[in-house]
Image 1 (cartoon, rainbow, N blue to C red):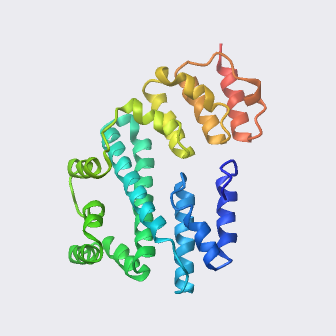
Image 2: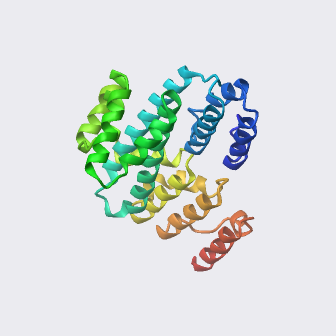
Image 3: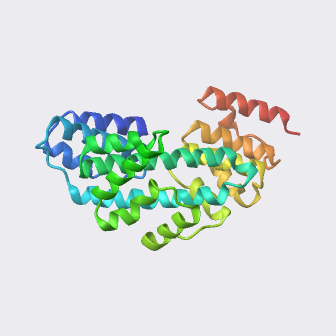
Length: 272
C-alpha cells in the first residue's frame, strides 16, 4: 500500500486485505492514507473505514487524521473549482472540463464519506441522497441538517459545496481559508501533466493538441515513455497533430500495449 511504485490496482487490493483484519491496527494503518495523492486510494480507504465503523461500533478511529483529511480534501475541491473556472469557457477544453468536473464530484463524495466517519455515516448517507433530490424542499432540508451538524469553521468551509454559491464566491472562500489563487492556463496544464491522474494527463495533452503544444513539447515528449499506455498514445497523438515529431521511436513501434503499438506504426507511416 505504501509503495507508490505499485499500480493503483495493487494498492487498492492491499487496502481490502488490511480492512479484512477488522481491528484497531487495520483502522490505524488505513487512516494514514486518507490524504494519499490518488483520489482512488483515498476513496477506497474512506469506504473501507466506513464499513469497519458500521460493523464494529467500538473500532478506534484516528480523528485527527480524519480532520486533516477533511481540510486537505476541501482544499483540493476548491483548487479543482478554480481550474474549472479557468477552462470552462474554452471550446477546446470540453474533455478537460468534463474530467475536472468528474474529479470535483469525487472530491465532494469523499468529503461526505469523511464527514460520515467523523459524525454519523447513516445521517451523511441520507443527506447526500437528499442533496441530489429534484425537490427543492428536500435539498434545503439536507443543507439544514449539515448546517446543524457541522462546527462553525467547518460550516464556513464546507457549506459552499452544497449551497448554490456563485463561482466567484466559492473562489473567494478558497482564497480566504486556503490561500488559493487563480492560476493561468499554462500553470494548470503543468499541474495536470505532472500529477498522478493519468486521465487528467491525457485530457491536458488532448487540449494542447487542439491549441498549442509548443511550450510543453519537452513535457509531452517525456510522456511518450510514461508507464501508462493511454498517456503514451495521447502524447504521440498530440505531437503528431502539431507536427512536432519527425520519427517514431523504436520502443513505441514495438510497444507492449497493442493499441499503442498499432497507433505508433500508423503515425510512423504518415511521416515524411
